[in-house]
Image (cartoon, rainbow, N blue to C red; front, side, top):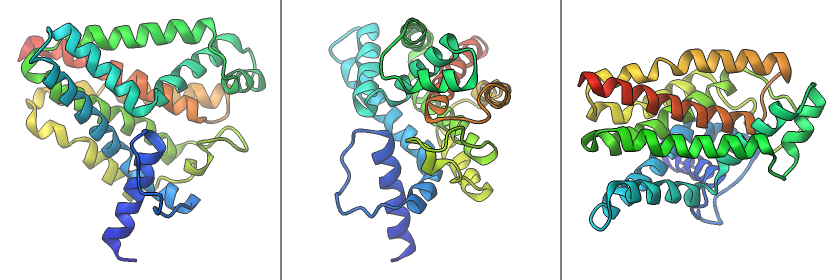
Length: 253
């Protein structure tokens, strides 16, 4: 198999894992291939963000900005199946309702939505809406795309330094997936939108580093590692923090 064809298959596996976008049934699957696909997770994020941005742009021809943003957020949920939002809710239920490692992990695996998860989802989705609405229209779409990319980079960086908390689970094949060259490729991909944004917006990425370091430390303390739900939670929190920083920086541009 040629190098380009193999990399294309890795990208398709990443797309299949994180979205509801159909991929060819003939795409070869193995745990090793899924591990290798981790380098494309931020690129999948840029694609999801680009599709959501396109929905907002098209909706602005017929609707006011708040409605367009609502439709863009709805598109994100439909494209991903609420994959990361589900992880955030499960994480919030587990950390909010558990008091020791096994209890937390058990609650996270429960498919039912609890009070902590529901409240966290409401705040996260409402926060995204308010932050996107607060951005200047000329930068809104690019910052939306950038947020999808850098937040997934933050989550995928956990694969570089942290260990998986369970013996099995839906994210287990990714637990040893990331090496330094793959991470650098993922990082380069995630920064692509910033070539079209004022350089000052790069500062909005800086708060993601202490968040990621604190989050990893917290998980090591409570769980001994991460789970798929933890990665989804970190992605959502990173996206919110990036948008918050971008809104703040807009005052200086």
